[in-house]
Length: 118
Picture 1 (spheres, rainbow, N blue to C red):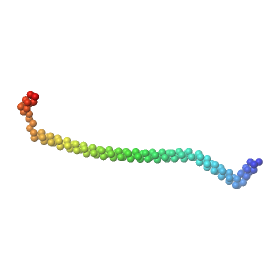
Picture 2 (spheres, rainbow, N blue to C red):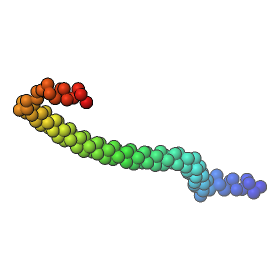
Picture 3 (cartoon, helix red, strand yellow):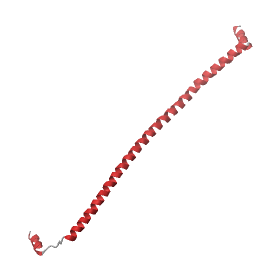
Picture 4 (cartoon, helix red, strand yellow):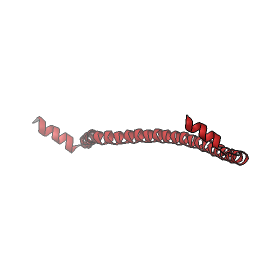
């Protein structure tokens, strides 16, 4: 009896129909919200992971750029030292050629005899 009068009021009057519609709307919105939370969490996690990966990639890029700059500086220093060593070698070779051309390096028989007798 109560149910029949309640259903008659809910579905028979304009305010009852609006109340049922509002209740169904709120219920469906709550259900959608409850079901969509996992999707929102999943999207947020993907976004956070992307941000963290981007930050890690930027940090790695910075380290690689710093390493490349250090290697370039070391290579420049090495090339300079190599040029200095080659210049020194050339100067020493010229000095040796000059010395050989000015010194008469002939070993006499007396020196050979002294060395043999030792």
